[in-house]
Length: 283
Ligand SMILES: Nc1nc2c(c(=O)[nH]1)N[C@@H](CN(C=O)c1ccc(C(=O)N[C@@H](CCC(=O)O)C(=O)O)cc1)CN2
Image (cartoon, rainbow, N blue to C red):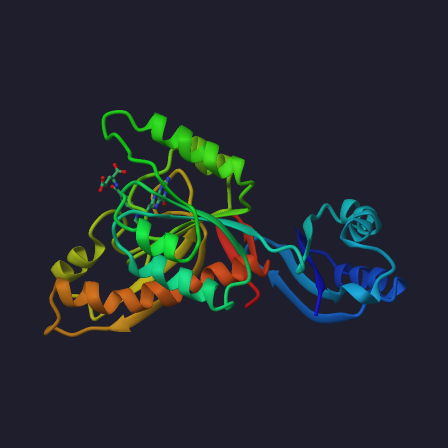
């Protein structure tokens, strides 16, 4: 069923839920899902409503126009999205294939409702797998001595495809600040550790050195600061003294795939709200 998603974050006060519910009811809006969260650390309030599109007398733009006065009254950060408008997604990878293959399969089987406009990689290894799915593959090598030409081309491709979201599926290059700022809270990364533990490169080898009993994966929005962006989803798997770093790499791959696909699905369904470098996820 086609729905409009109304997502709101604002300073907390009495009357927000009543006001939003009443304005939707005044237009005969049929709410199919409602989520609220009052955050006592930030004193901000977060809401996500799904409304049946066929219950309202206008389209998504009409809802935006009708809701704008309420949003202004409550100083809301807000957005309206239409479930019928599939988000355009650019995937980025390097040599590791497991996360990319998993997302391509979930998309190909219809599980991920989005339009994958292309895959961009700094290596050519994964071309055949991507093109088998009928998706364009762009090989954009990165010169370690001068990375800017490569990221200018990456940015050009992303803009040309009018991407709504970029997913780093084990893309092993640090994005420049300009790209992070331009696509704030729209670049999703999978880091192969349970952040904030083991940021940076080779986290499984760091974990083996430390002797941990859990390893994990973290899906987060990309910011200029490495592996420090708002966390969207995480999970872990148990390991023991019998597991070396190679075992952890193997065991970790399943967690990475699960966490990245969950995080992307939450983003595609407009379930993630960001405030103060943290998220509220109405999963
Ligand atoms: N601006 C950001 N870029 C990226 C982030 C991020 O949080 N902010 N996450 C990384 C992913 N990542 C770990 O999950 C990671 C990737 C790459 C490196 C790194 O040191 N790369 C070297 C090059 C390595 C190579 O050539 O193989 C580098 O970029 O100089 C560390 C962590 C994705 N990007």
